[in-house]
Length: 75
Length: 203
Image (cartoon, rainbow over all chains, first blue to last red; front, side, top):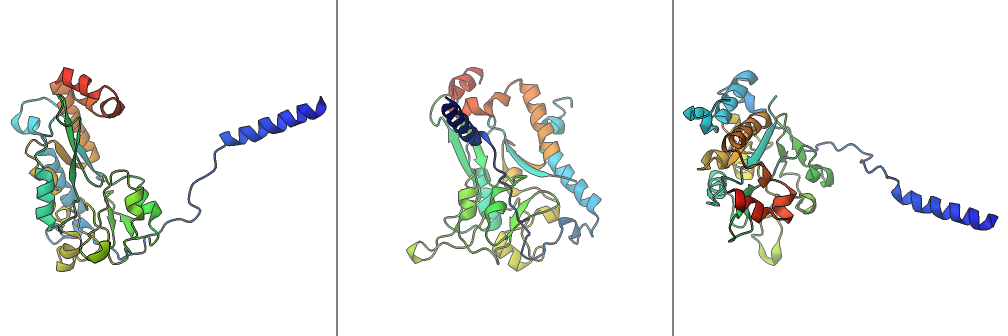
């Protein structure tokens, strides 16, 4: 009886291990090994002014909204 | 700080392949390589939907995680790029990518696999901006010119939106609220269940 109980508990514990989660995060941090890239705002037309570059891009992005361009919708 | 993203409005995409052509032309992409392509769900049936697919510039990009030579990097704007000088053309990134974005030119005999090529969000690569080397390896750098990717700018129905995630999300939200439908097109129901009937009934 005792043996069956121990065997039962051991089996239950073994089955339960299947529910556990193994950490799958990489142990070694991935570091880029290639050449350094220039920032887009460093381009001659923006002269390193990130705000100017962001404003130019935002203008283009908003231009994709024809509801705003034509004044057809609020927002 | 902008976080660059693409979104394709399946309600608007008319499967014209303008984005694919714009990309091929802008970067002079070689024969056999398609940085962008169209995927159509329920093709030929009422309520069919198409979306334009390329590298989605994932926040936690699996291609970066599996690359054995660590040739991938992410710009401050969230664009996933890679260094072709380091790439060994192993193809791991192709297997890892859920969108099939990495492409391999097969110009040589015996199925030779060249260095990986993929959508750069028109942001070039790790070479001097607007240099010949940058254009030859990665294509034109429109982002450094303050422009959006050519595919999105060329889209005639403005189905394909590109730019800062917050801005394009707001554009898409305005559309859905104005036309009072469209958000159901994205998701499980469209892809695997009664998407055709559901979308067809509302269209």
